[in-house]
Length: 79
Image (cartoon, rainbow, N blue to C red; front, side):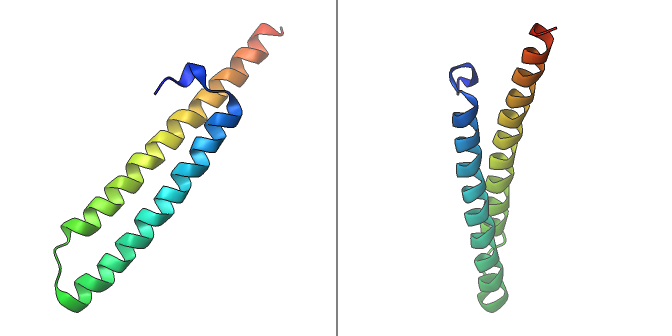
């Protein structure tokens, strides 16, 4: 991932994509929870869903930080 090549619109687009993935991961984990309750399935599937969501949240934080850094650089160069 080369953040320097992305403009703010691309960073925001990637954030939206990650948010959708997080929603899917959490919804899937909810289904696995229900299945675990009903059938005794292993909890590792739930863990994988939550870990995947955390990874996507991390990418959002990285991109959001990049937007903040760029805005601060703009402020710094206009002074």
